Image 1 (tube, rainbow, N blue to C red):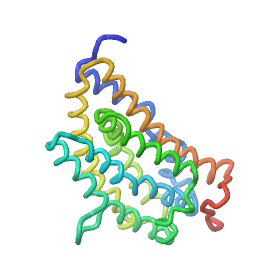
Image 2: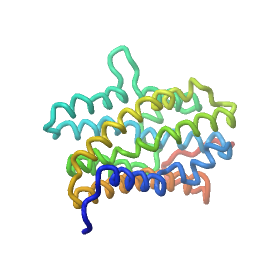
Image 3: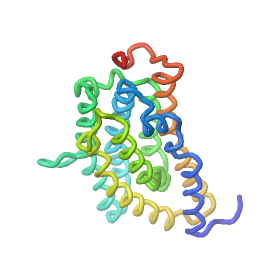
Image 4: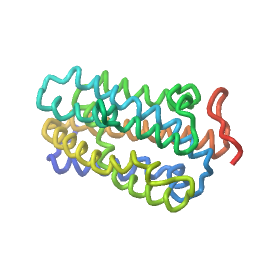
Length: 244
């Protein structure tokens, strides 16, 4: 094991992982953002992505439950509110459901989760389990994909609005909110990691945690591409779009 990195060197190494592995580079996203998917394929994306969206507050609640630092808990709990909402105020999950409905999906089908791909369930459960079982430092580091989110959000919104007549700004309201939420969350998590990952061993764990999270996101898109693009073989019981 080499000598430990400075905080700035650690941040650089983390950003290098994102530049190589973040899912903005996946072929499915390239097709989505450039108008190459049909409506049914986009519906499949929204239906499956709901599994991931719905588990974010669950993984964050498990992180909070074992966090001894009150100051961290005070900041981190905002993530749950952002996704679950509060009485009289909708959150990200509700906005995602409105996105799905705007694409012509049934809310019941999306929330029921039975039509999602098995690989989606497996990948998302692996992420929840990682946050629940790994160290607090690794759990926080795994959220750092949010450092790279603003770029893909802007590309997605611009591309989908330009290329799909059935998409509106109202449909994409979830992403408009994330343009401010994700940078705020990433800034806090990055500062925490740079402050607490001081040994080379902990720094490697942090790098591995971010790599794992990138793999979780990539695996979900691999499954979507296989089932709905090429070769186009959704497994038994999974969502089957209407003819495009």
